[in-house]
Image 1: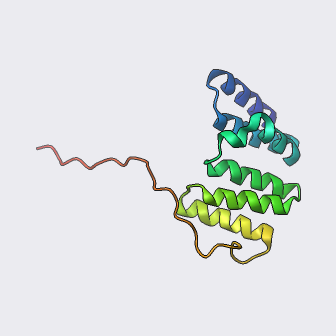
Image 2: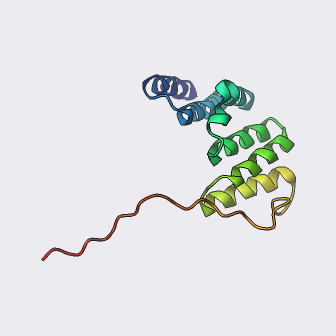
Image 3: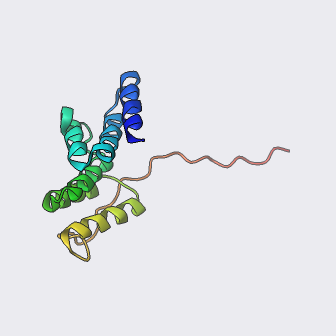
Length: 131
């Protein structure tokens, strides 16, 4: 029920405002009302400027642009997403999306993928067994 999901994101935005909440709301709007509406929600409040280094913002924009047939803009958005930090599996997915909109077997203009930002998640350090 996408209408309910949009309402929940509206409530979350009131409780804990965040550009990521707005991004997720734009995705839900796109699912509910179509890609053009999702793009309009994404473009509201200059959301992309707030999420300039967040690859998912550009990947979402690319997907919405692809859905409305704006393939050149979609390719630029996917390429921008690749310039932001992401994991190797995410990079491969975005590269496939980019290749899909350009018709290329591999992303155009890239000799190789730029390095992704290192994973900054902390991993638990194993503790020695207690006697």
